[in-house]
Length: 171
Image 1 (cartoon, rainbow, N blue to C red):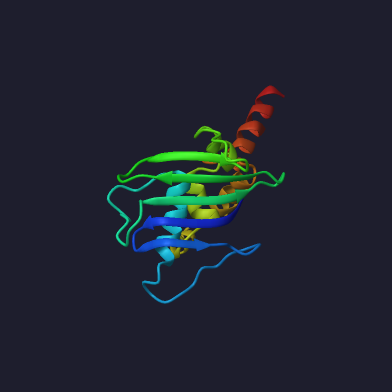
Image 2: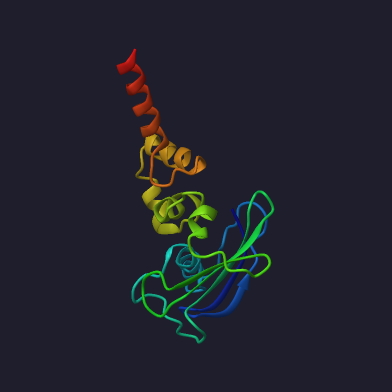
């Protein structure tokens, strides 16, 4: 899944903003209080739900917006989420023809990547970057390996170790 457009209706001090990430790695930088952390929180909120009592639409608009995404097979989707309170809010997943595929489509598009993996591997801020330095090499490898396999919160190394132990018990 690749994010092709980030469109904010209202989120914190962001209102009617659109960002189109460039191909490859995207680094968002700017002055203090420019909205970098707010933009990252917005992407996380659209994908995984809103945090309670944070990032109300202070500059106008409805709290929420949408992400345009494209899949490796060329399919395109629009993930919309709006909500005034914390939690899941109102989620819609639209295909390229504008047909709502239902909220159950989102986990399929995320390919098993859960919020914690997304936060620490795919889209992280300064807080996660400092936390990342505290991880051991095996923990980092397990997160990346598990994310690459679409295992979400399941560690690929743990699965491998369980399989190895099961094989040794059999033979």
